[in-house]
Every structure is written in C-alpha cells, then in structure tokens.
Length: 198
Image 1 (cartoon, rainbow, N blue to C red):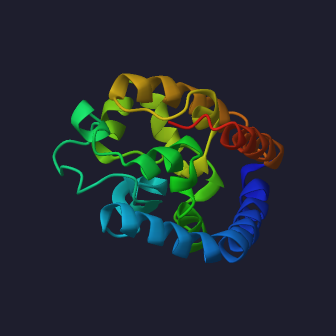
Image 2: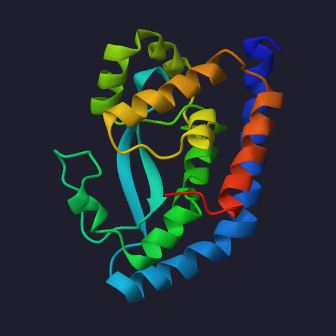
C-alpha cells in the first residue's frame, strides 16, 4: 500500500478506535484510577511529559501517574532513585501498561497514532540519531502508543536500551501497512493480558 493510501485509513482507524476506548473504557477507568491514586499518594491523576512527535514537533504525552512526587527536570533516566518512587499501584499500572491508556487522548488530538515508533525525549532522540542516522526517517511518522519495538523489546530506561528498541522500530518503517498495524495491536493485547509490562 502506498504511503498516502495508508495514512488516510490509518487516521480514520485511529479516530474510531481511540474514541471507542475513551467512551467505553476511560470514561469509568479515569475516575476509578483517580480515586486509587488519591488515596495512595494524595497526588494528581495524570503525568505529562514533553516528547518529540512527527517532524520533530514537541507535544505533551499523557500517562496515569505511577510515581510519587515529580521527575527531576535534568535527569530523564529512570535511575534507581526514580524506581524507588514507583507506588504499589503504579507497579500494577505499568505491569499491564494501563498507565499508557491516557495516550488515546493524544491519538484523538492527532499528536500520536495507535501504532508507530515510540515517542522519545529530545535528549534521547539526539543520542539515537548519533548512532543510527536513519532513525531520522522515523520522524516522518506520528509516534504510537505501541510499536514493534515495544512488543519485541519493551520499555527502555537508558540510551543503550533505546538503541536496541529503535532498531526494531526501523523494521516498522520498512513495512508500513494496515496489516502490520493490526499485527502489532494483536501482539500488544497479548503482552498486556500476560502482564509483561515493566
């Protein structure tokens, strides 16, 4: 399928699928999770972070808050100190990747897609490009909630891990099609049900 013929139906699918999830799942899940987070930590429900999207445009990615306190501005690495801030409920959210669900709002806004390369922070994106120049082509696509890299490798906490995941996402760039997207979505559902998140 040509790129233009692929992009339009992909966007239609993104809008329909994210709308269904927001209406049927997030409409009741957000209040429930908000209550649990409040009773556990007394903190807000959502966590936002600046990520780099299509054509290098920055946007704020949404997640359910899984840590106490605020992340250090100048330390994007998930260090041992950062891991210690993850709450008990936060571990559950991450294990089943429920913390990612608010990104369906990013999809509806047009900042992300259901399937696409993982959106990175600028610091890590610069590091990836230094080692894998071809990765710049990834920025022609909208980042996704899930990707081949997420399914095959999972979460990444440092540049070395991100480089390994990035190489998987380059496979996606060479195989753009709705069929590939559906395969990635199916694989993601299996990962989620098996609790193979972090």
